[in-house]
Each structure stands twice: as C-alpha cells, then as structure tokens.
Image 1 (tube, rainbow, N blue to C red):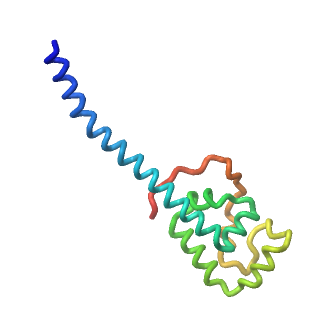
Image 2 (cartoon, one colour):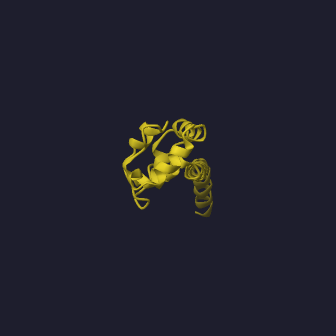
Image 3 (cartoon, rainbow, N blue to C red):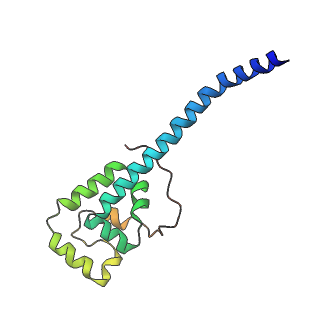
Amino acid sequence: MMKVTIIWMAVAAVFMLPTMMVLAFIFRNSRTADLYYNGLANRVEQERLGQMLKQKGVDTAHYVRGSSSVEVFKAIQNCRNCSEKAHCGEHLQQESANLGAPDFCPNQNAINAQAPVSPDEPKPEATPPA
C-alpha cells in the first residue's frame, strides 16, 4: 500500500511540475507587464500630455493600457517635439482646458478620443508590450 502511494505521489509530481512552471511564467509576465505599464504611465504624467489627460478626467494608467505602446510613445514624442509649448502652457492654465486638447496640439485626436475614467475603475487587462 505504501509503495502505491509513493508511486502516485511521484506521478502527480511529474504532471504537476509543467503546470506549476506554466503558472509561474504567467504570473511573472503579468508582474513584468504591470511594471512596464506603470513606468510608461509615469512617463506620460511627466509630459504636458499627462496634464491634458488629467484635466480631461482620464487616468493615465487607463490611457496607457488602453492604447498600443507605439501610440503612447508617438504621443510622448509629439509632446516633446511640439513647437507650441508656450501656447500649451497657457491652455493648461485656463479653466476651459478640461474640454479637451486645443486645435494646435499634435495629440489632439488621441486626447479627445479618451473618455473620462476614474482611477478607481478596474484597469484594462495588461497585454504584452508591442
């Protein structure tokens, strides 16, 4: 009887090991994705893009997870290379700034396409970076 129990335990261990390895891989990648998206959200918040999103009521974490990485990096670059930074600063000081991005903003379409989201709402599922 003891031999049978030991054999069954060995068989169970052999079959459980691949399952445990797969689960470890999934959980590791989910933590990695969270670190990636949190870092990207921090980069967005450092730009005027983050200020415009915040004034519109959009949580940057939702924006980053709901957009492709390429779109987010392009928006960051557009913001950094913008020739209207002085105009943008003035716009952000106005109370009407929460209506959306101004006409001169290179990210106008991306910002205006975002719907206001509370930071308390569940974030979209993390997908691997593109």
